[in-house]
Image (cartoon, rainbow, N blue to C red):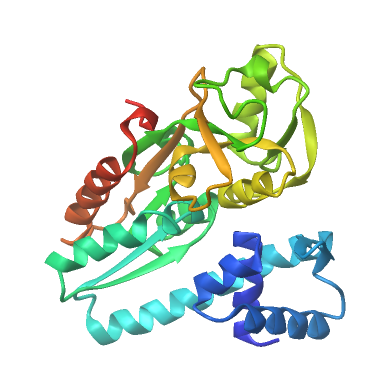
Length: 303
């Protein structure tokens, strides 16, 4: 097994699609597909089930992912340490963020920050929130952004912002003309969700249960909100997605409608507690917070 194969595998598991994985790795889609095929041949068992042009991880893939993720984090840590020794930590900032942030406004925020700090180097890594918490605790990044409240991280940090969820429906759906969608409107609808082990799914399910609403679970569950939008556009159901993801969606085939009562998705920014942050950390965090608030629709920002 080669390192690049494992990187491609992790990217597909994180992003849920070959297209977004290719974008993350800055390689072509055929290259990602070839790397996955080579990895499956080396492993000796299938990692994905292919259905209607989409990849669905097998149970074996889920088990392998846990070990691959830990191993790659170790490799990345060694590479960062070598770089730190070479550069003496001068002008370098390692930021870890979940896909909803890293694949939306964060690249633009970094671009604006570099206009005033052109001499520094920033590495943006994409991980799930729990992995980011572990990285911050283990001092393996300078800044970690997670879609968790501070009270649930067990580490040091501050609130970044809180975004509302909106209802994503196809433009021809019966709810597309509504100004606001409420829980009762979802009764009996085919509904796309995150996997049940994610906190966001638990919060949304609890909200529907409190209102006595039962939806029809869709056949597909995805970890990344952008994939929920694509599935809604493909006619696989409707969904609630965070406003950050909704505002990044470029297609004209969906309508995003305010949902009440508000279902917040809180983002927190974490820094290692055991070491003094570099001088770049504080201005970078302040810049990202200001940039995000300026970019996002104020209707969907929760105070």
